[in-house]
Length: 99
Image (cartoon, rainbow, N blue to C red; front, side, top):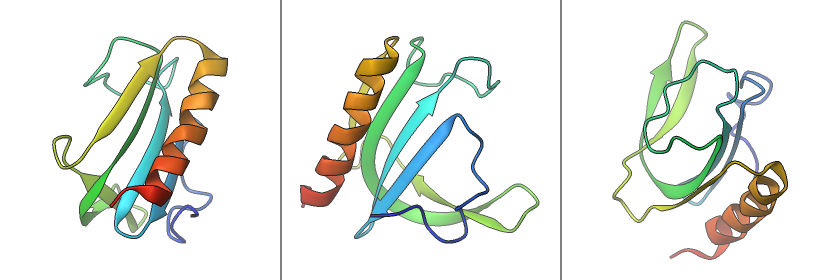
């Protein structure tokens, strides 16, 4: 489980991504990053979902692992930084064992 080669070093500090066997785990800290809070008003969102396609993102030639929220998605949100880290570890484990 690693960040895809094209994403390594190119993600903003508010995002962590791991990809494994067609699925993606993502951790997002919305505090001060300016990204829209689509799913939760809480500071941190952590999720695991099936990748439906790789889409170009922005102008850097980065391909992003695009998911659809209802395709086998697991998601949690919190305002607590320690809980967010625990959820990230759980997401990585779920990524590894999800069918």
